[in-house]
Each structure stands twice: as C-alpha cells, then as structure tokens.
Length: 361
Ligand code: NAI
Ligand code: MG
Image (cartoon, rainbow, N blue to C red):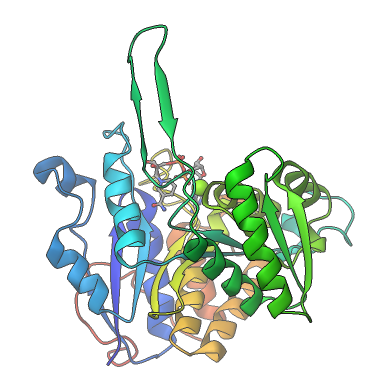
C-alpha cells in the first residue's frame, strides 16, 4: 500500500493540511498517511535540528509527501526554513518545481479584459540550483568595504533535465525565461541546452523572453502562456505573480518532482502566514489543489480532475474564504469542496497517524 508522508509544519500549515487530508481521504485512493507532526519550529527551537535522518527516511520511503508550510516569526534567520525546505528538495533531488496557475473563476481576476485574463499556465521552476544554491560567502563584515557573494550555480545536468521536463508537459508551447543578456555565463549554458531541447520537440512552439519582459507580458497578457521554464529565483518570483493573477497565493498549488526517481513533494505555494495563523481564515484551496497534483502523481488523474471540478464549483458558488471574497472559515471552505465531491464534512484530521485513507470512513 502506498504511504503519503505528511508534514503539517507551522502557522496555517496544519490548518490547511487538515482540509487537504479530508479531500485525500474522500478520494478513496487506498493510501495510508504517515504524519510527521513534530517537524516544526517548536522542535527546532528545542533541539536545534529541523529534520532528523529518521524523518528523512520516512519521507524517502513514502510514495509522495504533502507539506503544509514552515516558518516561525520567532526564528529570524533562514536556517530553520532552509533546514526543512532546502533539505527536502536536495535530499529527494526533486529538481522540478511545478507550479500551475489557473484562473478558477472570472471574478478572481484583477485584469479587466476577459479574453486576456484566462490564466491557465504552468511555471516550471528549476528547484535545486541557481541563486538558491547556498554557495557563497562574504568578508569585511560591518566595514564600509563589506562584500557578500551568492553564487548563481548552473550545471548542464541541472539545466537540461528541467528543460526536458518542461517540454514533456507542454500542451502548446514552452517559453524560456532568463536574463542571458546580463547574466552571461549561466545564460549561455541555458541557451545551449535550450537549443538542444527545442530540436528534440519540433512540434512544441518554443519562445524566449528576458525575465523583465516576461513579468510585463504575464501581467498584461497571461493567457498567452502555456509552460514557462526558468531558473530557481526567477521561477519563485514569476510564480507568485502568476498566482496573484489567478486569484491569489491562497489557492496556488505546487509539486516538487524528480521524474527519474518518482519522488514527489506537494505543497501549497504560500508560507505559514503568521499574520493570520489561528484565526481560522486561511484558504485551504492551495493545499487541496496540491492534493490533486499528488493524486495525479500516484496515477489517479480522474480523482485529480474530480478535485479540480469540486474546487471550481465551490469557487463559482462563492463558498470560499475571505481572501477570495467569501466569508467561510478554513474548515467550511474545505467542507464546501468535500460537499462538491459528494462527501460529508471532513474532520480536518492532521493528527491521526498511519491510518488508511479511504478505508476507515
Ligand atoms: P506567506 O505566504 O506565509 O504570507 C504572505 C501573505 O499572504 C500574508 O499576508 C498571508 O496572510 C497571506 N496568505 C498566505 N497564505 C494564505 C492562505 N492560505 N489564505 C489566506 N491568506 C494567505 O509568506 P511570508 O509572510 O513571506 O512568510 C511567512 C513565513 O513562512 C516565513 O517564516 C517564511 O520563511 C515562511 N515561508 C514558508 C514557505 C513554505 O513552507 N513553502 C514558503 C514561503 C514562506
Ligand atoms: Mg516564494
């Protein structure tokens, strides 16, 4: 039986993972969950370690992992969040960050012209290299001559495998986004790998934009895009922009994938949102749509589509949280999706361990 490892995390992470697990449960996939609810800031503050080797083993053994969000206002540095996110991404070598942006209802778009606002694209973000490589250093700290260097790491292997993935999921077109005119060495490597990938996919329309132009085009004509493939940092920024155009960060979903090993880590794009944690207003749709990606990863495309149809129906009916213009709580918004799936209201079961989803009600 397939196991899904679950890391609820901090802040609104556990709050949105509850409804997401209810939806996973409702799909009856016959999977069991392994909840690592001790992987959070509280443990880190006590022990100084974000994840143990045993935690990583449990994640590695699972068929997929669902993550809420990590981050805590008591921890000002990046050590803890990197300790979880970067460790998971690096240890699992999930080199693709797959971030779909789709406008679920007209009402959610900030763009006026209906034809232009039909957002339905995917940002394929390189997930293990680039400016987030963690390589760098500094010197002369605190002096007027202080310097700080963060290395923008690009490898042929890293670049060519993420480009290959982008073409493999394209419906119409792939657009490469970089800043090769200013960031020359990495730019040239991406451009060389790009020419090779374009030649392998003659039937997919290929285009190239510099990141500044891409940001402008995405804001003014998002319907023009199908797949955007780009580096770690540009993908981070453009996917937040795409999420905002599609109704907001609260419903943006993502998958971290290694198509070669089959590893998959699924998480809403948002963080732990300490400003609204505990108020019961967090939008669970980003986490629920991440469950749809997880189901797809487990070979259950039909169930994934059922979740998406249920989300679209709940959004159309206005049965959503305040960030999308509704008045429902996190639990009620999750319940609205469950109702569309023809299921009774959920139990927001983040704390139950090792139970069989779909087999115990
Ligand atoms: P954030 O995504 O947590 O929040 C940004 C804004 O969006 C806030 O105003 C928040 O209230 C709102 N928001 C986020 N999710 C929402 C939801 N589901 N429903 C309604 N509103 C929502 O980003 P922020 O504030 O920059 O970071 C907070 C903490 O989360 C930090 O510790 C950061 O390091 C961490 N973080 C973790 C991530 C992860 O676990 N993947 C990703 C981004 C940040
Ligand atoms: Mg981000």
